[in-house]
Each structure stands twice: as structure tokens, then as C-alpha cells.
Length: 416
Image (cartoon, rainbow, N blue to C red; front, side, top):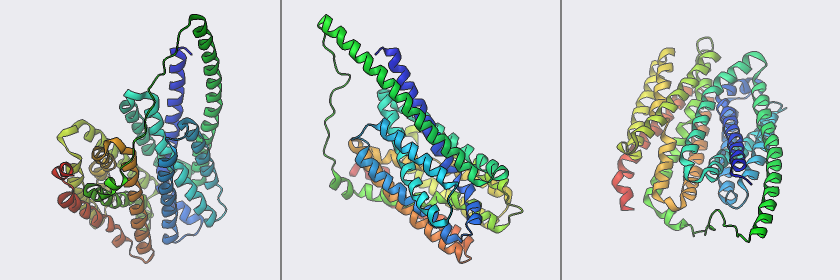
């Protein structure tokens, strides 16, 4: 198979991987805008609504475990394609769920298969581009942020025109259709590759040449699970992941919270713009962290980001003014938008030879934390203490500040 043909195959695979990532970003990020409509459609109380979030979190926790066990043992292209197909089917089912119980089951599937799509996209891009993986994974994550930013506007358009179900029907149809098309094109490419391999083999036999493998076999290393779990640094990092992952659900609950305050002021359009502002801030935050590089250690960023974010969220809840919500949400995205990236960097630096295992452990802890905090917020809101419940992220952020002041410091990692 010629080098040009190989490049075409890589470009094709990368393009569909980007489609899967954008599709995941849009379908995942539009949930906060769709949640108030789901509550109306199924006549849910706030505790039941929080269960939808928690169920998806359970699925994401399972996705991390399954991906950790299977991703490096199976063909990533085939696994990613099937996960994207099933995820798209689950999105289609969301738009047609007849009852709340069915919706809960679908949310579990969305969390499981969506989480696997999310994890596999970066891993597959890394395999495709090898030494250039950093550049192309960055492009992939930029597309994720762009899809997340466009999701609220797309959701609002669907709500105003055909209904909230349309958003899931469209995104599910695109994901499932892209997966099926990728399956077909991959099979055609595989046939062409097999034909090229036979032709190359025939030439080799005629010339007496031998083929050199593209890469040397990779020898698996034993993963030091005991060393990872017993590391004080990793324990503190897992605790901070639990806390910070719960804070991210502040933006998921925000449209529902504001509509509870005053639907005439905090309209769908306003909440959509609010979420867009948050994603703009997130993009700026991640870009800024990348530009600053070593001049801003992740530990320092997470410490001061948590403190300033806590003060900002408290001010927004106390002032309760539309323009302050808008500006504050943008600033919140700028201050805290790169917290996930910073935690991944810390995990990889702690155990670089088994970074997938460490990030998976911290990721599971993060999902558990988000489930717990989201459940508490939903239960308190259901009792009429919604504003008090929204102060929980403020408390959590202050705890994260304490973790990165007392537990995780730049010198503590070197001591481990």
C-alpha cells in the first residue's frame, strides 16, 4: 500500500474520530439546557431530575473501568466505531423514551458508551499520529470545546422549533450514521490494504527482499497498583478530583436553578447565552494555561483558581442580578475551565509510565464525587433550599483550596 494511500486512510480515520468527538461534545453539553424541559415532560421533582445525572455518572464510571481493561487489548478503531454506534442509538432512544424509568436506563447507557467514546477518541488519535500525538490531541480537544460551546444554542433552537426531543434525535442520528459510514469505508480501506499487501509480498518474493516491521513489539510493564494507591500525592489528587468534579455540575444545575427563580427574567435564550459564555471562558482558560506552561505550575493554578472561583460563585448567588450572572459565568469559565487539564497533567507527571492507570483512578474518584455532590444538591433543592444547595460548590471549592495549600504543593510531589 502506497504512502499516499496510508495517509488517506489516516486522514479518514482522524476525520471520523473528530466527528465522534464533536457529536459527543454537543450531545453531552446540551443536557443542561434540556434538563428543565425533561422535568416538565416527565413531571419530575428535583430529586428525580438529579437521578438522571447520577445514573449517567454511574455509566461513566463503568466506562472508565471497561476502557482501562479493553482499550489496549482490542482494535481501537473497531471498538470506537461500535461504541459510537451504540451511543448514537441511545441518543435516539432518549428522544423517544416513553417513561421516566426507561429514561433512567437510557441515561445509564449514555454515560457508559459516551464515556467510552470520549476516552477512545484521544487514545485512537494518539495511535494514529505517534510522535505528533500532542498536536492532534490538542486539535481534538479544541473541537470538543467548540462543540460544547455550540451545544446550548443548538438545544435552544430545537426547543423553540420542534421540541427538546429533536436535539437528541438529530445528534443521535448523526453519531449512528457516521459510525455506520465509517464501518463501510474502513472495510473498503481494509480490502484495498490487503490487496496492496499481497502485491508487496509478490514483489518481495521476486526481488528476495524482506519486510521490516513498522514498530518493535511493545512489552507490557507491570503496573505498580500498590505504589500508586499508597502514594500520598495520588490520594490528595483523588480527593481534589472528587471535589472538583462535583463543582462542574454547578453549570448543569444553573439553568434549572435560574428558571426556578424567575422564568420571565431567566429565559431559555438567557440561559443558553449563559452556558455559551461559560464555554468561551473555558476555551480561554485552557489556552492560557497552555501558553503559560511551566511559569504557572498546575498545583498553583488549582489552588488560586479554586479560591477565586469560590468567592466569585458566592458573589453571584448573593447579588442575583442577570448581568452579574452573565459576566460572572464567563469569569468562572476563565478561572476554572482548565482544572480538568491541570489534574490530568499532575497525574501523568506523578507516574508517567502508567499514566492511563493513574488518570483512570483519579477519573473514577472524580465521577464518584460528582455523583455525591449532585445528589446532595438535588435533595436539598427538592426541599426548597435551592439557593443554599447552590452554595455547596462554594464550600467544595474552598476545600480544594485547602487541599492544594496543605496537601499538594510543588515540593510534595518531589518528595514522593
